[in-house]
Image 1 (cartoon, rainbow, N blue to C red):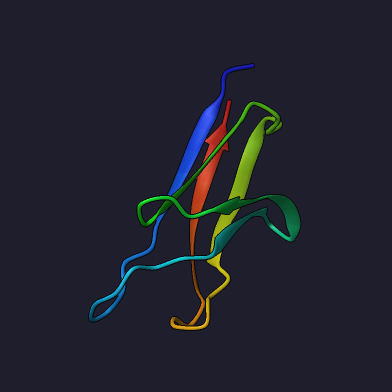
Image 2 (tube, rainbow, N blue to C red):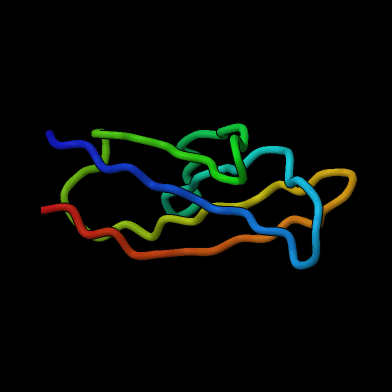
Length: 77
């Protein structure tokens, strides 16, 4: 029943202000798409079931920046 917050930071390789959205996935299940604010997207949920979850944050890119993604494993007891 406790919540967990995932934060994705998007930093440009050179310079500029990153805009756009980040989509959070649990495996292949879409959790939420969040707009970047100050180079970060935060998502809080208390809906993860017990077990191991493969969480992926995908930056969807913009007209000035290519997309990218990163993953982590979250264990819920």
